[in-house]
Length: 405
Image 1 (cartoon, one colour):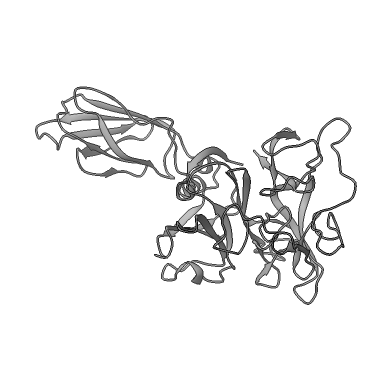
Image 2 (cartoon, helix red, strand yellow):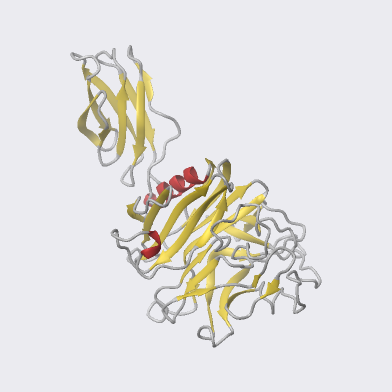
């Protein structure tokens, strides 16, 4: 499973990074290196999902017209492609750039080492179907994941928005059952309700784990951990029985919330509040909610879909107004290791949806927070798992892990 760990410069940069990663864009460790007499200025450098691991050499072959020099472009694997001209944006199927300035001479050279994108290398790259369809957002992306089979069509959309006066810089995350570029973000075919991820306009350390059917993003905002799951779960059923088990889970459905919101409503899929929706066998989006309420007045919920083991009959407490488990703590195993427990989406209310245990969240597990801390790495079956806490909560029941492989 491809993983990216980094630090983004705000909510919009984080969205750009996510889109490039899931779609398999190539990467590079440094900008093109220049040797020669000219200024060596190169802008708008970019890779594509077709980028392969190689070194590109860009050499000035004709300097008769200052400011409009001609450059040969050749990849160590791809070979020669079309020539570039100073001052004109250049792109081929693998890279893009624009050389600027004047005073270059024949033989001046840029050298640029690029690496194939992890999702492309894994054969699991998603498709960017559209972007920028809805002017109400800072940026909106419409993605299609290929599934684990490579032949599925899973429609997942994210849009970044902000309100500077109210100091929130968030994402609106949704699933749909198709894509229509003539429609706005909230009008896509069979679109889910909004699940909002609460971010900010400052540095955001992040962990991104992706496969062909879903993405998991953990974004650290101040001392909170905002968790996004977007895509299919592992269903208890065959593809013909359960063709579209898509989970959209973020922080809340309250779009105008700030990252510091501590209401019970703001809660990740580890113990969901108002920010999770699931496409069931009934053919529609259903709310997934273990609990709800404002700060200091939380309640357990039994009317919607729930998540085991943190729901009311697991680590819940039947007492009114108490949304933390008061029983004995679960400890690590005698050898100091931790036992992950799958997060199972289920329904016990036949008036809301079919009574069912739908399946397990892919790549996220519950784990005890006893003798544990967010950002720990736990080796389980030879694979590192990142310890996460439920936003700001540090009660031992409010922890989980994300598989990093």
